[in-house]
Image (cartoon, rainbow, N blue to C red; front, side, top):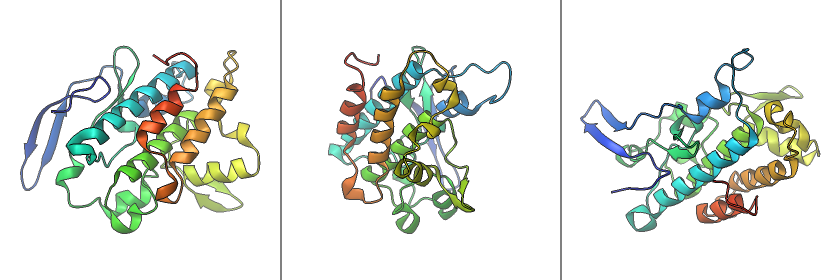
Length: 232
């Protein structure tokens, strides 16, 4: 029943005791994870420019907002990450993998501890909420800005930390410029102000306290307001 240009359409599913599968249309451009991290350091890599990243963030935010409207405003995605965001033929972000979380009792403990996408409260409960979806989406925004995978660990003063924690610490020490992906910093367009705005949105989404995170509809508006014209 879910129909939206920024939500990958579910074509078929298979449900059994041992296997739970969902089948979607094939996206030739691949996932956001592939676009951000594939072929890093290789001569044939085609980097994502800032305009493309802004389009992806806008589309994915709209898709998540549509998902959260489902089931009378109670639907949860539960597994937002860059490998579940795909690029359509126009370069807009589309969210896939919708529906699997609703038929699973809880997320695996290992997934909660190691992915880097899940909100702090998920570590204990392993239960997703719309607020934890917003946290995960905030991590994706930070991933877009930094070009770093959340699963990696940044070491500072010998301490290991996830991507969200690392960025919080960097911002506190006013080293904001150091977090941005060199692939977009090298552009000549001068988009630093827009990137800082996006970082502030991402940090709001990854607030440790659930009640401090914005609603996804507000996130959509904030991303669209980064530019006076629509990112599409």
